[in-house]
Length: 396
Image (tube, rainbow, N blue to C red):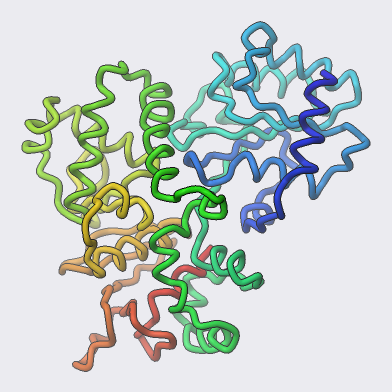
């Protein structure tokens, strides 16, 4: 136990500058069992350590961070470790990479039932369906840690403290919001940089971003998809090929039959693998308004713009970047997106409200349709139903 406390202290004390994440304020920390899902590379470990640093006194030793990839947990159960921790006065256990431990959900439920004075916060992959887990569904509160929004990227890069806005606020008051932000910065100056490398926190590291991202993507496929979904390793090359082929045509309509032939897997397997890639947050799938999975999507997008560069390794159309950015940022604000009737259009479902959006590169000098909104790339401040595209990066 002492070695874990020493590691915890070292990690917290050597945590490089706290990166403010909106999720830290959104979580109800009074819950006793909290699951934080996120794709590989978005900063789940740093998030746990930041929580420990902000809310706990190191000297009280009532909070402890554990990474469950420790070999120690091949012979020690989470339950027995939690009991010893509680007996020593422990109150909050932070469990990282919980899926590395077999039978983790049963033991977390056991801890929840046996130690009512203990809070457990754990991290997991987006591929894990915690809300459907029989052991945990009724007791766990699940949150999603996402990659950086454009707002968070700017706050870190420029040492600012811009706040997030709801979609309603942006639609109703976008001109004033944009004017206020533009009085402090030029929001278009760093927009391309965000598209290229701003979504994942490791852009802050002194390593080649593209190589690091490729390594992360391969780890997502090998661990987050194959391991959690219990797919044989021999199918990894087919899964990698499918992702690559989808990236080449994104955003585009997938030809399931041709993908089946190219990847040498059945049509049903192609569809299932696409859903796994979506849950791993490597792609997004856009459906018609009245359709969902397992129907064939109308369009496949990469999950975020950063993924487009190292996977395609070719010039990327500006319109593809604009649409992918819009889909990513809107989707992360818990809205649903559906395919519009024309190219470059989306239907956004926000609660009981429905909005139509058209994504454009510059302001249309012709007559705009009053029944839809326009998200325009090369624009700082909009007017009426014309909104600058970058502003949708302030939704979270």
